[in-house]
Length: 441
Image (cartoon, rainbow, N blue to C red; front, side, top):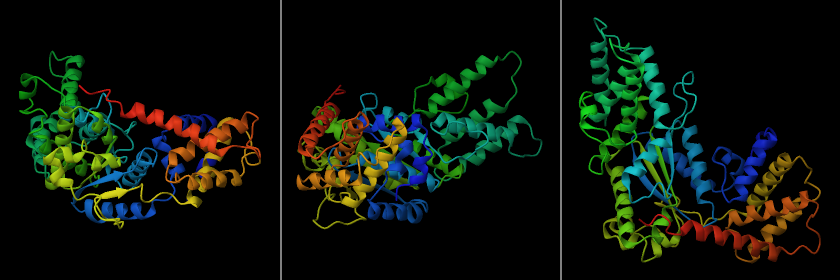
């Protein structure tokens, strides 16, 4: 049920920002609960996986399948909210020109840059997103509560902390040494002749290392760090990251990778490199613990000759997804296209949109755009075989609300067919732009 009382608390600017995002075809991630209807069977079993499998040390991969407009990104945002509420760390990565799947280091950097945790140190953390924010809060907290050891000297405290971190299950020695080095950087008094700028530079080197960046061997050797991120050690990096998050009392890591379908439009060499990295991430779940990865895809990724089947090393792992006619809510494939929202759920969504539009533009919409209009939109989409296209429905409702607010409410002669055609043309343009091989390099 959409939380009406929370919608009523929105300020006009917040409501306007939501409408503007929806007008562009995206749902503001922080307001996902305002638009969450349906999909309960899928969400119930994902909740069960989180609670009784991932939090207990399990790991798995699932694919979220749906056509453009079926609500894949929205569904992933709902999963993100659910995971945070369950006290998991979450990273929501959108593949773009700047984050191409064929470049693993770029994807890893985006994973840690988009990393978000429940508030572990509420009194310290101001911004919850990003590995730097999380590390900074942890280092400050560790400096405030040093590890008690006999003698209590700085070297002894550092050695004890390094030993404690190294003993965490799944923790790599390089990652543990980097953490200890950061805590030391934040807590140790400036040495004779050392400047605050030099100390800050040392911190920056460590932050960049945690973000998967390159650093000189000379800078890292003094911190007892002997490796930087690459495909070979990526499993250990990810395992160490999860070990650190568990140390912060997170229950595991939920990784969401959106827009995987853009790979299909790339050249063969780029596709192969991208699919190899998908395989690499799947391999991580076979050895990792406390990890769940979700990929969003369109049917072409499974069916097309340029999809997964074009790369044998990956296809051998995933060839069974999508097989069978009957829905299995515990299968690897979460098929949103086969489980569209019901009419009453779309109507509930439409009424929420109407209320947000009212707050945004400070007007009364109930009489001009009644529930009967929203019902007609649903009925028309259903007759045209388009009921599953949530994005189309949202675009139509907002277009009607815009016109009504400007003095042109839908009358008896209102042409819903023309409205649907116009909205679908906009969506096709968005889809074309999204799937263009703009980062085919």
